[in-house]
Amino acid sequence: MASTDDTATLTKTKAAPDGPHGGRVMNVERADFQELVPEGRAPVQGMDGFDPCYSDIVDYIVRCTHKIWDERDVGLIYTHYTHNIVLYTPMATIYDREAVVRDTIQRLVSLPERRGMATHVIWGGDDKDGFYTSHLVTGQGRYTQNGHYGPANGRPFVSRTVADCMIHRNKIYREWVVSDQMAIVQQLGLDVDAYATKIAQTKLAAGQTVLDIGETGLMLGQYPPATQADLSIAKTDLERHTLTWLHDSFNRKMFGCYRDIYAPTVMWHGPLMKELYGVSSVTHQALALVGAFPDAQFAPQHICSTPCNEGGTKVAVRWVMEGHHLGFGGLTSLGDPTGKRVQVMGISHYHYKDGKIVDEWTVYDELSLLVQIKMAQLADKPSAQEVLDN
Image (cartoon, rainbow, N blue to C red; front, side, top):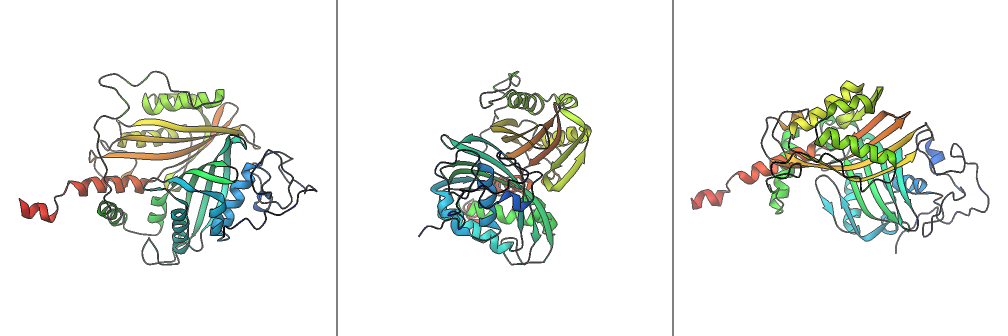
């Protein structure tokens, strides 16, 4: 029998005090956790088909994520995901609900003390056409149970994850999860190279390969990158502005535009839990990523934005970079250039205030890149049977 949210029967005939939300769709930034999962809160937007405990879409994604992962109500997946859910991660794709249940349980077994704290939620859509949420979570805990990281060692860790979800009538039917696994592996003190090799060997044994189709999408023949960004996925002027400068910097390599885009006091929160300050640091991180994959095309897949109660607007961009490991950059675990083709899936959140970006949160997984390179290198090696045959 399908599980339901045990708060789903709450009545809302009498509105509860609305804390910092003021009768509007929730913002996460200034709210304590108890204010993000209120009991008896009156609906503040259309939520047709959703469990009655959810007063808005931010309430939905924060509450159900907490109940599944922190309260261990894994069975809510049966009522909050469609049977044919497609869930994309940097290293695998899941194609059905039962696989999501199994994967969730395995992660809970490996990291039983982990707690995920909502950092912010950027969203778009409505209950008629469907919602889209981009949910940034900061997770922390200790590795206290033997699991997919190997023998437990009790070491603490902290990492960021962004989950982008497409939701209709209480159910998630498409999801992209970018988790900074490299940050966890390093903090647990594991041999990164050996761990990536083990994953690569497992994937190759299952018949998975990394194919190199040659030319990337950055250039067609001998033409330079497109002068104008594709703005078709944007809905507002700020979203169009964001796609324009992302294209100018990552595809056209005009990194000098950052002086006009970022505030002098910008804070940059990146992979491996890096915390950097200032426009120069942001510029260097972009150069460090592009430096490793200089022929990569930066391709935004989705963008949405919401006003922020700290002032200004937050914009979420889900993106993919595809190219070859042709140079040196800031991803030191990759070592010397290998020429292997890789794909980077990332999600970035930008906080604009007074026309400038004052905060950026970017998540991608360096471990996924290392595994892709290892797979390509292992695929190059002849098998024992091939050696005998020759």
